[in-house]
Length: 434
Image (cartoon, rainbow, N blue to C red; front, side, top):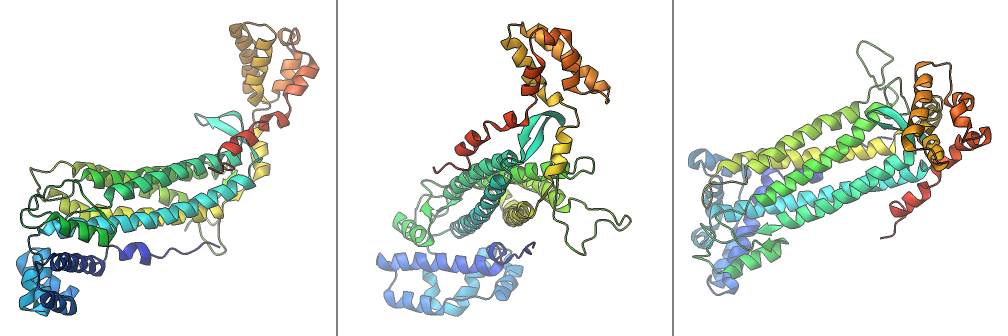
């Protein structure tokens, strides 16, 4: 059965509570580091640690006046702590908190996306093995080419999913940095040891150099990785949409009992999940473009990136999490029709063997241009006359029979030859232990 999508894990990373909880953790860790260094009295830190708190409602209320979210937050925390709050945010700038938090959110989201990607990888592997030898026609330019197998389609997607996992791992590594470096990144009022302590406790690495902000090429790489993964899912979705077309119908999405396809036409079974994935992938690409636009900021920092990121980061992470959930269920529950695949394979009445005939003629000593002319002339006759088969026409062609016997032609038209290297390909991908 199709598993219903729920948001809690991914959505929780982008709630006000998660954000403010992380802000508070960073501020407390900075105070703790300064306490260890002897800059904050232990008794003061103990009071800060025991009293520090906030409420989302109060922070938002104060922000109505300050028009500054971090100041509103610090004001609310100071209301709980009292005079000892003077040690909080010492020597720091707002972006030390904002950017370290955003990195933590994106790293957490990326780790969740890796879980989803591995679920999809497992589903693709299972289907590839199941349909390893399920013959179907291969298409180039949308036109019948030579035979392939449905398992090889899944294997191709499996390999791409593996690459996307590596891309996401790199993106998580790249975004997994924090900063506690002050107004323009020079540590003028704080020792770098505070940054090292905070980042270690947050599971981040210190950015080797920053300005007032962590540099946005990191965020752009993360969001472009999300967009690439979305494009991979769209590729799968488009293939399934094509295979589900009425005149093709080699595979289709699971259609549950009671599901409706059209308000007007009761017979409809539409590929709505694949279409949803296709549409959402466009959103991810748009967000990735916006992330690239955020890379170039004025001097040590402007604020043009901030409003954009508040939309594109949670939207892209949540959208891709949802898309991966959809794609995994889509693959797991995909209905495959091997009989229709075989029927479609034979629609062109043997033309899929044209290259094999061509190469056999070349092997008999004919010049390639002459062999191509002979095969294409016969193939075009079959293409235009649905009463003819390629094999029959070859067996009547005197030029062909000078070089190939009818037994040779019969041996060529053998479906078993189509699968001779499938095991080899599977050993390089699905069965590869590396």
